[in-house]
Length: 203
Image: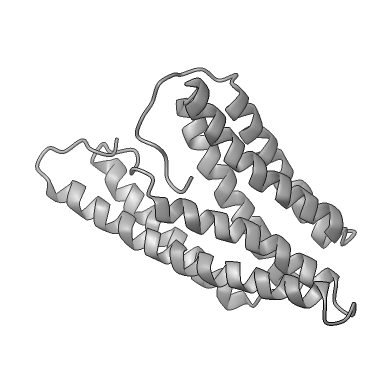
């Protein structure tokens, strides 16, 4: 999820996992419009939930059916990054999360983008996905809907809104910590690859 897989089996474009990834990408601008336009938080939460489910499904289907593709390895992490960025932006504008959290998460992505740019100059197009990256993305993509739900349920008493906010912040804090941990792992992977003579690992 976090950076592209190294195993490539097909160059096919029209596969079930790729269709799911395309659908997730189309949902990004719709999500932003829902929470910033009509404030249709219920539908935005449904959309984020569906995105999280399809994110899990496309990888599961790709591995089970042998439909792992080059395009899919680009679309899947791209959809993750765009959903995280769009959700951060939307929630920050709404005042649901602080702007410093946006900065902390985006700074990690900027650092990793620089590392990947250096690798690309050496002919290496990606790094192997680490479990920490997948866990971080899972926590963030499930924490944000709970935070949105907590904001929508404000004023309903010490029940749904409070529980959703507690769960949302728990996932957000775990996800942010894992996000940076995974980033440091990727930086170390890149350092080892660049240090190894004539290494093509991770491409």
